[in-house]
Length: 130
Image 1 (spheres, helix red, strand yellow):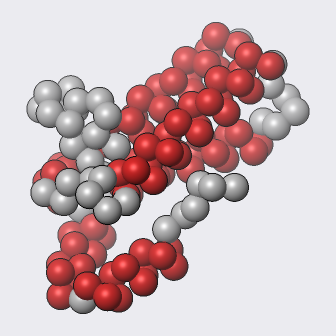
Image 2 (cartoon, one colour):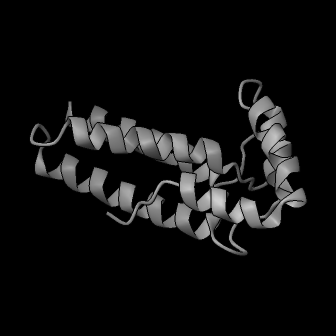
């Protein structure tokens, strides 16, 4: 069971890393960034970390904590100024059918309102610095 749990955590982490642009997309061979989907995978790992607290072996807990910390740091770096390229994110959003409508609506708002964008980001961006 320990090995299966670790494999599950690593699969989730690989998905998050791919959407953070750390691993090339297997279909295109190019790194692409989609912070919204990356955040979803990171949040799922964080939820698993909280829900399994006290029920994991030391190895499972250590791996989950390390992977989660690494991904959270990568997310902060990618979301920071100059971290995430702006061009790949919209193209990747169009490849995903469900999230395509929401991020596409958000992207045009950013250029037209630069000051509110940074303020809204601060209000709604999840902080991983707990």
